[in-house]
Structure formats: structure tokens, C-alpha cells
Image 1 (spheres, rainbow, N blue to C red):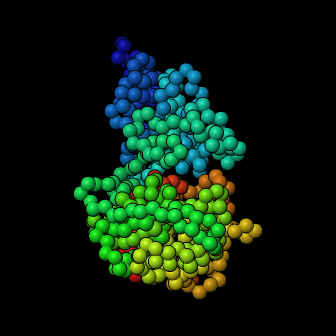
Image 2 (spheres, one colour; image 1 turned 180 degrees about the horizontal axis):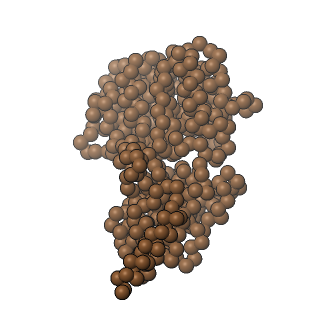
Image 3 (tube, rainbow, N blue to C red; image 1 turned 90 degrees about the horizontal axis):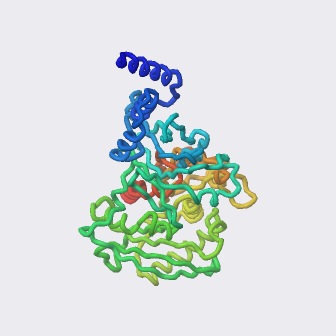
Length: 427
């Protein structure tokens, strides 16, 4: 009799779950938990958390409808004071309402399942008892971020600076950050720090010069000019990346100069397609590298790169001084932007009416970069696609790559290696 009663309870539970089936397929562990809770199993939640502890989170399983995708389930162990929980990730910037977790009724389990491409790579945190104000309407975003927490069930984390530690997600097909991993067996290049003074920009800043292992004075090397030097010496460890790429013979030996930002709030002005920046780099920095640093290079083999706002700056510098900078790598460049008083997408608009540039471009951007913060007109993704189309229509040389990622260094540190391999091995 008890067996029949239990079977009836399970059948009713299955019918209830089926009637409330979400558009995204449900995680098997969550589905099983719901059945157990509805059947009255007291230890169901505790057993679920034991499973999470063993598997770690998020819970990842193949999407049965398409093996190029996975079902990714984020979980949070709530308590009596938990009113809501939100998965704060690049996806939440795109669709905040869909990032709010659901609670398994009658349990302390909160969850959110996404259907993601298998190359997803991103960071996330959990917001507990959030205000639930859409991000684009938030007036004090940084204050709101303070209580967000890493996922305690996920051992993989990433520190994005200023004390912010987030949990990290890497699906099986995600770009690998293998080039960022230092090894005692890999010869190290020499990194020296100097101060570079610009009379054109009326300021000075720190620069880091990288010389490859077995550097030969007087030899002509490919040159990398890297903007946002602070980020590319930390969040994206470019010296280590160059060491490992060179040791693997994936790229030829190169020299690099990583340019820090000037003190104060001049970054936004300098990097927003300001011709004075390009003039300083071409007329002051390159001669300084030749005379003070005793480096040898030529314009055709000189590449400039940056991310976000400095990705835009790199492209604008090459646009203004193509003889000095023959290649560009932009990681999620802010091509929606324009100098003050100009319409959005200044660079694409100018390129559309000009002869093809003798410059090779590598543009990469995240598919999730359609967020409303900060206000973007148009989005990062749309602006990068538009610039690609303009370059191709004008007969330009461009390699364009989209990743299932957002606007963050956790993605860029894993993808920059592919960009360098392609650009340093092409003419």
C-alpha cells in the first residue's frame, strides 16, 4: 500500500513539473531534487548539496538537443533571510530579469540554468537580497557591487583587481589560457621599467620594455606597442604570454613596450581617437625606443594593440600613422565611441570614405557585449561588426573573431595568444 502511495506521489510530482516546464531544459539534478522534495523526502536538499560539493558548480551537462551547447546551472544555498539571489555575469548585463534565481519550493536551493555555447568563458558572482533594479537604471553601481560574492561551490576564481574576486566558468570548448602559465622550464625575457616623458601630451608615464630570451643587440625584431600597460602586465600577463609563445615557437622572438596610462583622468581624452596620442607614439616613443632603449624595428613589423577604449585607440593610431604601425590587435574595442561633439562610430565612418589602409587588423569581441552599461550607442558587438564590414568593403585586411564571452580580462587573457600567433606570422 505504501509503495502504491509513493508511486502516486511521484507521478503527481512529475505531472506538476512537466506542466511548469521552463523554456530552457532543466538540469537533471534540479529535476530530481524537485521530485524528491515533492515526494516528502526530508534529506533531499542535504543530498543535493553533497552532490554539488563533489561535482563543484556550476553544474554542467550536455544539451540533449544540440551537443554544441551545454546546460549550465548556477546554485546558491539560501537561508531563512534569503529573499532573492542573482547570477551576476556578462549575461545579466544583457538580460537582468533572466538572471534572477528560482527557489526549489520547500528547500534551501536556489538555481538558474542557462543554455550556453560550449566555448563559453566568463566570470560571475552571486548577489544576495539584491535591489533587483535593472542595471541600466542603477545610480550607484559600484556601491551595489560591494556585497556580491564568489560561488563557494566553485574552486576556480579570478581576481580582476581592486580586491574584486569572482568565480570563473570555462566550458570544454572555451579558449585556453595555457599561454599565461609560467613554467620554470621556459626561458624568461627581460622586463625593465622606465619613465617616458611626452612633450606632445604634456605628461609622463611608466613603460615596461620586454626583450625576448637570447636578445641580440642591433638585431631587427618585430615590435609590439601595447596600450593599457598596467592591465597587460597583470590581468593579462603579456611578458609570460610572450615567453611561452616564443618557447613553443608559435611566434618569432619579439620586443614589446607596454605603455602605462598617464596620471590623473587624461586616459579618456587621450584614447578616444585623439591624434595627439598617435603623434606622440610615432614622433616621440618610437625614436625613444630606438635611441634610449637601443631597439631595432620597422613600421611594417610594428603592431599596436589594446583592449576596450585602448583597442579603439590602437586602431585610430594606425589609421593616423599607418607607416609606423602596420598591424592592429583590438580586444573588444570601443568602436561605438567618438570624440566629443561627433556622432558615434567615428572611426568606421571615416574609414568608409577613405582608400584602404595599408594596415592589417585583428578584431575580437564577445557575443555577450550588448550590455547597456555604460550607455553604448550602438553596442560593442554591433560596432565591432560594423567596423569589420567597413574594412572589408574598402578592401582592407581584417581577421574578425567572436567569442562566447563578455567584456572582461578573464576572456582577453585567453584569446590574445591566438591573435598574436596569427598576426606575428602574417605579412
